Amino acid sequence: MSAAHPSLIVTLSSPHGLSQAAPAAASEALRAAGGLVSAEVAFDPPYAIDLVVRGLSAPAARAAIELETEGFDIVAQPAGPARLKRLLVADMDSTMIGQECIDELADYAGRKAEIAAITERAMQGELDFAQALEERVAALAGLDADAIRQCLEERISLTPGARTLIGTMRAKGARTILISGGFTAFTETIASRIGFDRQVANRLDIADGRLTGTVAHPIVDSGVKRATLLAERDTLGLPPEATLAVGDGANDIPMIEAAGLGIAYHAKPRAAEAADAAVRHGNLTALLWAQGLPRSEWLQAED
Image (tube, rainbow, N blue to C red; front, side, top):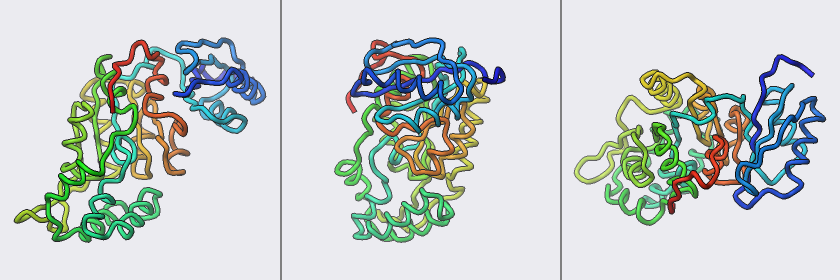
């Protein structure tokens, strides 16, 4: 067993409640991988438990448990005072909301299947993001701008746990940023609805009440997402480990990797592999359990 690795906090969580066998199975998987489980802390039973682990890196601990167990989420991170994050930067589409806005908007132009196929390839990292964005926006040329309002009202729903996550983190003193490769026409409303401090996204060009088929430059892409996290972190004077990023697609990877804790949320394979943790079972409140916060400390809100 190596002494080079710092102590870890490995959080197991499930909004449906952990089975009685889950902690034992996870502990056994960690021991089999060469780790020492020195304590179990059920800080929010039966929904979340911390395992204190030595002798493994965080990626190795996560991999060991994921290989041998299923049905709950796992977040492994170094133990320390920065567990409670002071900055959150979050993707919007398929992360804070349950849809891809451009795909739903395309449906009002009768081109959803075509646009959704391009979106899927872009989120898998198979296409250049900026080029794919401009191609999809061009397909919306001539669409009545009022379709954006209709789309927001009829198609877009918040991800379960979104408002509880943001409300709780802000109540604990964190700054929260919604950033999207989508459009301000959506992020302005969604950020307000959820309660974010700031939103960053692309601006659709509109003339005479219709979409022109172009988007203003510079385009908010993966580089801008990462740069925004770093700039906000430096402005707040935070160490890297005090930051949290969450997203689901390939264009979220740079900000996920730059954060102290990067979480992939019901994500594409490349994003899940790049992240420190992958939420596959629960909702966004898994990010609160990852910070050691029991439900008694959450600012509960309906999504």
